[in-house]
Image (tube, rainbow, N blue to C red):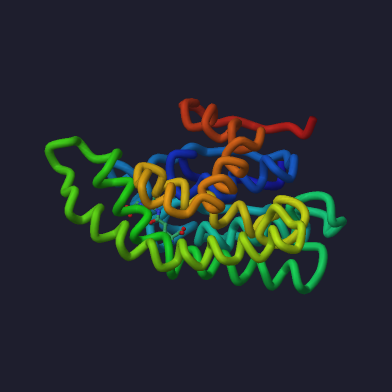
Length: 227
Ligand SMILES: N[C@@H](CCC(=O)N[C@@H](CS)C(=O)NCC(=O)O)C(=O)O
């Protein structure tokens, strides 16, 4: 095994896990939790001094590549463990690579914080601790990037494309969908952006994404073999 991904699937680790599964890679999954300070141990901090999951370790003949930051891990897998064949999720052209870079940076800067607020204050936190007014404010702000996504999907569809970077699902779609999924409790917001809502459902219906949901329920270290 040359690839190890640290981090439970119910975290930002889902992004590289989903990518590795889409790519059909063999990898070891170490489902390290972020709760109770598990990521703050000295051995783990030697991998990621930030004390966060995910971490990707790629044992290569020339030495280990240790990578943190979920979007970087995801793009790295597509670039260095996928084939630029125009079939899989890896960018096959500079234009597709540009889309992957653009959408992943856009996701962390324009979408992630408010989508997480929606998730936490509409669904994830104990009901007594939720602050619906924080979720409502986040949803109002999210209308701005969602209008952008809606417009881009509309333009893509006018060109006969069903996905963000072209005619097939790519890592660009994966990066955005993995975060927009957090905003699913904001039903009215998504209903107001029907192309984005429909595209998100298509992303989440993919077999590799379904496998992620099963993975989120598994407690132990797992190895995944290519079919
Ligand atoms: N920007 C980082 C954020 C990583 C992050 O905050 N991960 C959370 C889990 S989703 C974590 O490890 N939290 C543990 C902690 O902060 O103690 C990334 O995208 O990888």
